[in-house]
Image 1 (cartoon, rainbow, N blue to C red):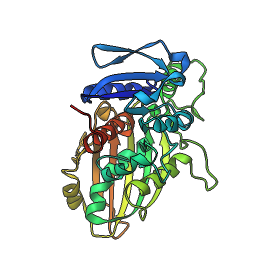
Image 2 (cartoon, rainbow, N blue to C red):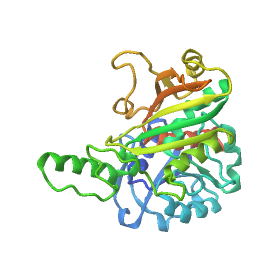
Image 3 (cartoon, rainbow, N blue to C red):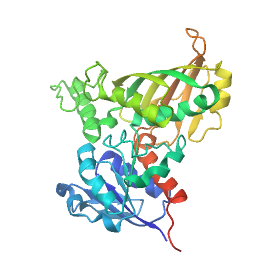
Length: 341
């Protein structure tokens, strides 16, 4: 006997990826419901290769009949509907930032902190981390376990799909406009994104960091270890899918590239592709559609006593969002939910 699962924001880029991932991984469902705003209700959306779902209106949906809901419709929608769903007995896995720092809501990356999931019952809400945080902590976890990470300095190179379908459309339209000499139109990004990079994701905070950079710091601490110091610079780049990160760490114990590779080698969800030759590393275009977090360019940092530098790449729509949410649901089913046969 399977579960009834709802996907909120099913018509968006991440929502569609959630449906695809549920089907690909054969999640034990008896019924899947696609939910979106009233303007999308009545439309059709694919689930797996052969099934089509009719999109239902989120505002009219009764969550009391649903076991698990995967939310990816933005923070405002989550703040309004996730508590209602949780109160109705449905367990929410939320992809927005709305509940990540709530002390009563576990923030989970299954490979990294699966035991945190046990606290889900406080509000029936589980938070999915920021896409750039998710891949970072997968790479950091085996290194922290082996060497004790003191400090992380990370610069991100984040694809436009992190801003949703509209962000991807803007990159496509601006790129086309450059080639045909049309005017460049900006709607989603603060500057032209085609053939450019923008060191600005989310709003600026009083200390000069952006909220995206703040998220990476506080979420890494909550998931991995509150004593790790994290500083980030987050940059939007003209790539459709796949976030990249240049990561510098300082550890308590001595570390070098050989011991780091050994620690990361067999960690779940992490693959090392690191050859000191042309094409001996992974770039965003190669990780698109893949589940793993890829690490390349591992080398010792000679500027600190115990330092390491590496390159980290992952599909932000999958491990950074949809896949991690489905993995949380799988862990929830395996450890905490039981269906009568």
